[in-house]
Structures are given as C-alpha cells and as structure tokens.
Length: 522
Image (cartoon, rainbow, N blue to C red; front, side, top):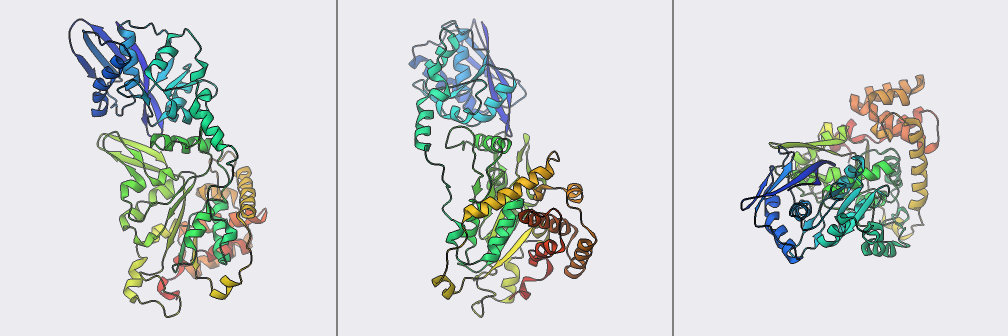
C-alpha cells in the first residue's frame, strides 16, 4: 500500500515541501531513497525502535521510503515523524484519514517521544501558504509558530499524540500549541517581564556627550558607527546602551529575524516571534564562517551578520580581528544580504544589520592620551590599517572617545536616560517610515543612490557647503552620499523638513578617519 506524508526542508530561511512516500509490498528489507544524508538514514533504526516501544510492529515485508523530490538533498532528523506515521498508515495498523492535510516534522526518541527540531517557523509559514489545515511539530518547536493563529498548530510530545490527531476521531484541542503546558508556563513566567533586557542605561554613562550624540544618530537612521578610544572610555557600555534605544521591530522584521533564528536552531525563548531587536557581540577571535555563515553540503547555517538582522552587530576590539574577516563584511554591509556558496548548493540569508565597532587607537591603547602611549609609529600605523578605505567608507559615523576626567566622574550629575533618547529615536524612525513608504527602504541608511537623490534634496547653500567639504577633505563618492544620509537623520531628529548646511557640517564631522591619517590625531 502506498502512503504519502508531507514534510518540509529549509533552503535559506524559506521552506519547500518534501513528500515522504512509503510503499509496503512483498519482499524483505527497508530501503530509503531520495538523496538522504547520514542523519536521515540513521532515522530508520531510531524510527523502528520508537514504533515498537509504542506497541506498533514493523511489517515483515519490503518497505520502500522515498523522499521526493529526489534531486533535492534531505538533511536533519526531522523526517523521523513523517516516516513513522507513513509506516503506520501504509501497514494498515491505524486509519489516518487526516495524514494528507498536515505538514509533519519532528525527531523521535527511542521511547516514542518527539524532540525539537530547527526550522519550525519556516515550516509553519509554508504550511499556511500551501493551504494545509495546519502543522504538527514537537511541543517545544511549535512555540515558535504560535503567531500563526489562522491555522492549526499542534505541539506534540509523543508519536501517540500524532496518531491521535490524524485519526480524526476527536478535535484534540489540548494538543494545540496555545493549550500546551509549555505555552502556559512561558506566559506565566513572562507576565510582568516587559522591562528592558539590556542593563546599560544612558543615564549610567558619565560624560561622553559627543559619543552619545553619535550613538543616537546611528540608532535613529540605522547607520553604522565606529568608536575609537582608550580603554575605559566607555565604548562597550555605549554599544550595549544602544540596544535599549532602538525601536521595536515591525511584524515583517520580526518574522524575518525569527525565521533566521529558527533555521539556526536558536528559536525565540518566548512563544511566537522575536520582538526585540537582536544584539550580537561575537568575540574578536571568531572565524570567517562564524561571522558570515557557513557549513558543509546542504547544512549551511547563518552567521553573526544574519543573526544580527534588523538589529546590532557589535564588534569589540575590531583592530584585533583578522583582516580577512573585516573585509568580508563589505558585501553584507552594502547589499544587506549574504550569499554562501558551496559545491553542492548556494544559500542567501538576510543581513540588514547596524555595525557598531569599537577599537583602541593602538596596541597599548593610550595613543592620543598625553605621553602614556608606548607604541612605535609603525605599530600605531599598522594597528588600524586593517580598517581599509572601503570598510571605512561603509561606516557612516566615526567617533573618537577620550577617558572621562577623574573630577567629572566624582562630581557627575545624573545624565539623560535611555527612555528619553529612545523616544526621539522612535519619532525620527516614524518620520523616515512616512517619507520612505513604498520605496523599499526602511531607514535613511538603507536608501540607495537614487532614493537618496529623491528623498534628500539639497538647496544651493547645501550644495556649496558639500562641495567645499568634498574638496577640502577629499571624501569619496560613497562618503558623499553617506554624509547626506546622516544629515537627513540629524534633520529628522530635529523635526526639520529639509537638510540645512549645519546638518551637513555635523554629519561630515563624524568622518575624521576619512580625511586624515590617524597618526595626525594625537
């Protein structure tokens, strides 16, 4: 008897349907075909043991399992569940009339329990878009799909739960994800936990008004920023405080970011979509695949640039990172996507992030702070030489930070808190949203050249100011447009309708790494 059960496979952050065909006929042996990897082939022994543990028997006949389409490689342990259900239905041990109406994915334990799998959110989205009645997932994975309330999302703990659903003799409301113990537990533990998750508030940072202003502009327009300064100047604290002033994600942003985390096996710690913008801070020793993504064969996973999508990628001690890793950021920063190519496939992940970099000015860290620096001119020159011109061109705001004097630390007064800064950032983002609606860009930083010319018109005074800046400072063409976009963000923070020369001058002041050698900045 031939039976078809429907599963899925992730390609990037989207899922495609995989049909599991099971045929039981005369003969002996279990045969699995359809370009399955080792993890899928190992599922046969795991699946048969789980079936026997729950009282089902393995037919003493030839069992052929085909994963279609046959030219698409299948990987992972999520096909355990559809294979097991297919064997039950094909052997006639249970009548499962609803088996064709749902997408099934899950890993089986030897006792018949169902374990979590990555990619639950793209699977659920595919099930909805393909017109299925719903999806059956492990209880833990089903929490990621709790937002899809327009279809049935079942969270099961054992194979017996799956059989009970597919028999169709009862509605099984207790197995819907919104009625599971895990869902209720998360809601109880999450009650009243609406406060900020990030512990650094702008009010806790003494001084550094200039750097705070740069951080506020970067957050308001989605701009990349680099902070250069001595140890203890507050670079890391400011980067962490930035996470607390970013506006909440839109529904579409939350869906895309949540799908990335789901594919990576890092689904939302709460039910449903990830609502808070991600803040990723990899160590400076992270490898190239860890930053941009990688993996072998079809098991290509997103890297930090994708996990930071719609959020912040904080690279501390960027001067210590390998030059190859820094240069690899060029494409994702400019294109807002990253394409990972391997011999057996190519996958594209979103990578629309804000880069926040921090670095000491030299190996000892104290160049520019009186006579404390012990480095030679050659050491100073080579330390930040990893930040090539093309990379600096892609960083909109450069901030130099000096340590706060001792007397100011002792006599510090309470500074403006993150809540007030976040309110201004949100207003600026709302102005950008209204202006850029329908253009495809969400922030000023995301505008391309044509959009910049369209949404950032300059009057004659602004053109003369910008022309003088270009001649005097030697800015590149890319820096020219980035200055205009930063100036537009400054105007949005002030609520100004048009860009003024003062906005352009302030924007240009944040590009000191372009206009002169760091050796002249002491």
